[in-house]
Length: 261
Image 1 (cartoon, rainbow, N blue to C red):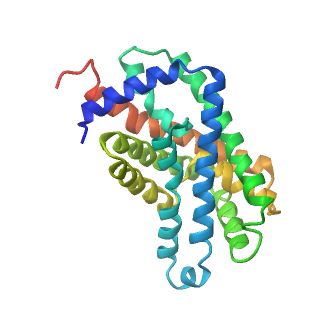
Image 2: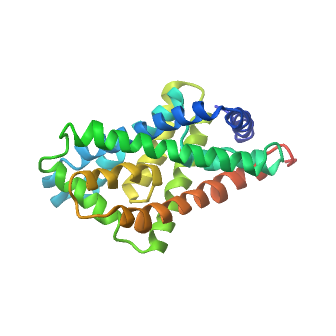
Image 3: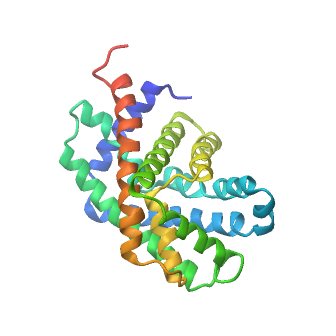
């Protein structure tokens, strides 16, 4: 297993490489990441949302099933390789602290990756899910509706705080994945924190780029402005805080090159 300091060194090299990617490469990898996260969301709906009787008697178990299926997206992102906005919220911070990269480089990456993630998630929502009618029938249609209604019904502050929790755990999952040295170890290390954040009901902006637009495509009474204002904006801001403040900064400060321990 790689030590925390070794993980920071790996993160630093990866961030430097990411900062040198061409725009076309970033957008392609970001599209793929958005699609991978969406596939995880679809699997969660089919397995977790497809158990209404179990949910009625034991809602905690169905939340766990929903959470247990979702991590396939981040597992693919890390192992196969793709650009995910939420993971990148933490990746660059150690290099920013050690002045190896500029803030402008990070913001450019974030903007392009966020856009590409959105397109990838929308592609899977519309073409791979809506047009194929995978979730059009009961009980999956009810699950799609309930998830989207719940995610757009909270206050800005609640969604923002849930966004912090989501990306705190997501970035820890990425960190743990880099600590492991074999594929099985990486899968398990990523699965645990991601399963936890989904089961707990935290808000992941890229996942919500799939869940809520899918509900809109399926005819749920939610507008695009409600999606963006009530969920996507606060979730995104919370995700940035969770990745930057609670993972990238403390670990970059404690184990980065400028700190002697």
